[in-house]
Amino acid sequence: MSTVATWPTQAETWLDSKGKGAWIAAMVLGFIFFWPVGLALLAYMIWSKRMFKGKRAGCAHRNAHIGFKSSGNTAFDAYKAETLNRLQTEQEAFESFLDRLREAKDKTEFDQFMDERGKQAQAPAPTAPAAPAPTQTVEL
Image 1 (cartoon, rainbow, N blue to C red):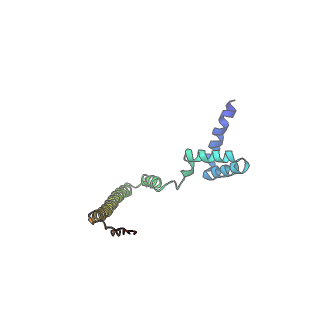
Image 2 (cartoon, rainbow, N blue to C red):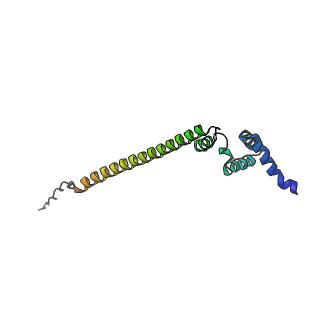
Image 3 (cartoon, helix red, strand yellow):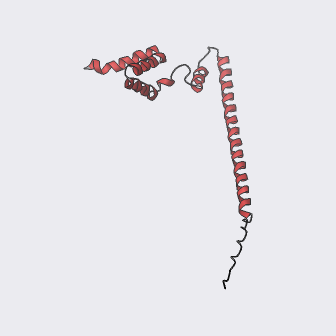
């Protein structure tokens, strides 16, 4: 019974050792032979984040890995750390600047809307022309 319990773990380990391509191939084969197996593999890959692992998992992950790798030269490593910190600070300042621009644009658009709405409320409502009075006819 222990063999039955460990075969999924062994399969997972084997697929992990082969890389993301093996997972995708297993999923495609699962869809071809019996679609619920392919669907289960797809759900597992998304749930376990296997679809997003790898060398190109994300810019932040890649930059963090590169930024912390030592070159062996302390002067260069200090320069690199200082440059990365400066760039991080500049990025945060730029994002803050963009947020302020968005807020200013939103405020301008809202103020314009309120001004137009206020003008419409103050303008007198157009009066409808009076209906002609009905004429009375007297029969003799």
